[in-house]
Amino acid sequence: MGKLYAVGFGPGGLEYMTQKCIDVIKSVDVITGYTTYVDIMKQYFPDKEYIASPMMKEIDRCRMAIELAESGKTVAMISSGDSGIYGMAGILLEMKHEMKSDVEIETVSGITAASAASAILGAPLMHDFTIISLSDLMTPLDLIMKRVDCAGQGDFIACFYNPKSKKRVDYLKRAADILMKYRDGSTPVGVVRNAGREDETSYLTTLDKIGESPVDMFSIVIIGNSNTYVEDGKMITPRGYSDKYGFAANGGKDE
Amino acid sequence: MGKLYAVGFGPGGLEYMTQKCIDVIKSVDVITGYTTYVDIMKQYFPDKEYIASPMMKEIDRCRMAIELAESGKTVAMISSGDSGIYGMAGILLEMKHEMKSDVEIETVSGITAASAASAILGAPLMHDFTIISLSDLMTPLDLIMKRVDCAGQGDFIACFYNPKSKKRVDYLKRAADILMKYRDGSTPVGVVRNAGREDETSYLTTLDKIGESPVDMFSIVIIGNSNTYVEDGKMITPRGYSDKYGFAANGGKDE
Image 1 (cartoon, helix red, strand yellow):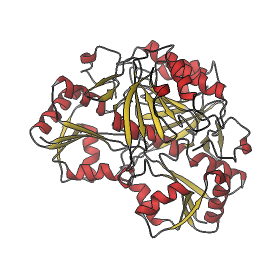
Image 2 (cartoon, rainbow over the protein chains, first blue to last red):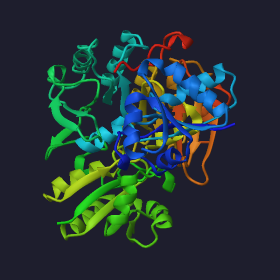
Image 3 (tube, rainbow over the protein chains, first blue to last red):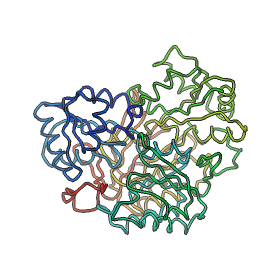
Image 4 (cartoon, rainbow over the protein chains, first blue to last red):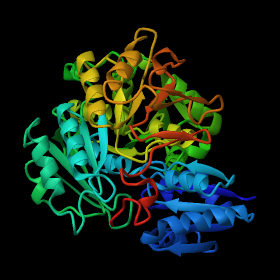
């Protein structure tokens, strides 16, 4: 019996991979994943054996990876970001159970897109936040928009994954309209495209303009809470709701 | 002029550090941070220069780090997890502005506690989630509990940071009671203590029992959404609200 790793390699650059990710990738017999991810890893680890599959064949890819591990191979199923956040870890565990396999599956965490985008924008995630996927392929649109409304009510910073696709052109605008029931149209918004890759771009805008701003499926959108501000080109959410310079006590940690 | 890095080193083990974290730590002149974090880094990088300071002196530590960088040193301000999530990135940018300094500050993302805990528990974060700190040192308790209520309304998976301290013994129970207005008491809950460190422990329980379960300030608590289940000892949130085995199309990604 081999072993199966669900490996998140982070945004894409080698420098964002954890030591464990690098060690696992170097040690396994086979690396498998969506074609785009395989192409990224081949740049850094060209001598490994890869099995690439198109995005639409996810279940087949999981089954194949589990069967490979059962046959004695060590296998890494790779994805960008964190394999534990909207990643491959869940579907692998589900398929393992479905196949009544007793192969060992280990998740190797990676830097998720919200972390990578946050570092580029400044410090927007210094307070409570939500991560919401705006893709309605597997989640009813009503529930997605209900969650956006909850993010608004609770004054959460909101990170949107999958903010737009060819088919979903207006969901981001609808989400922004919902949030504007609760916070000002001037609320800072940061957009990062291809965070941590060579062609990374980012910009800051405001909640009332994000609906018309250039955003695509490779972008992450971070909407500030009611206290978020922009200073020296950086998007910053204060860590507390107390007086800005009264936070000297212990900065919100009471450990 | 030197440079200042806000470095998140992840849960604690060297294997969870990114390549960039390791490179920056190796290259800087001085590493500074809360005593506990300095002790962790000294294990792996014993030959570096460290300046440790107690938790309560956070503002002073930031000022000192900025002044050191202004004097020409390269400095790493370290913290566990991701420096961009409830971390040092924000306070450094705020202090830089306050001090009218033009020192360059770069954030180096790390694996945040939710990611590390998730990998240990199974795959609880396969759908939309909130991260909420239950510490009320800098946030009004009413707002924290309002956010918990919003997490309940929106059927978000809920990750609680700082779930308990000596002074805050019942907040987690209050949060669980609020969530039980919206989801069943049998909802799976995972607790991870010292995720990714040598003395890591974890267990699964349910929402109706978490209030009385052993949780402390070094723990992360992850509460499932209405679809989360436990199978083979793993906590799993399905990636969609569609039929469990009808997700073969593309697994929620429509890129």
